[in-house]
Image (cartoon, rainbow, N blue to C red; front, top):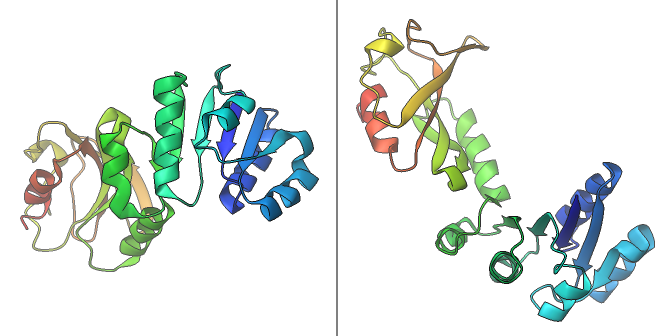
Length: 220
């Protein structure tokens, strides 16, 4: 693949390093002179200095080819939105992946149709919530392009689903149970699987169906 990476911070540099190790062609764009010089020592001709929101900088990096993927990984959400928009709408780049630094800005990326996105803060919070002994429903992964998400639900003794089989549950349309974690072991959820208190259930569902699923499994 040919990949353009905008943003030469730790994430951008590590992604570039990994892509090159896998044999891909990469151009890394970094605006700060001190960081650019450090990156140039390692990547040489594969790094360019400039503001990736500027057309001439992107064109110098080869966006008109176009690349297979553009990664907008700067530390500024507004810049990442601009880079994503330019890549998709002006140059027809087939795949744009953007970094979201502040989860509160996620809706802006969604409105602009920039997907998929990655947000370290949201990922860390999901892991933290997962470790809380008494959580009910937490978001693990959003597949915005497919309008789907994966959530984890913890069944407790008061849950209406405890003691019932999957096939006996009136799950909302557009949702499926994937697996059940019990006693540190996971099994695929099938129709005959009986849910028990303490189970951690993974489900895939259409975005916006969380409350319906919560009512069926938890009644909260």
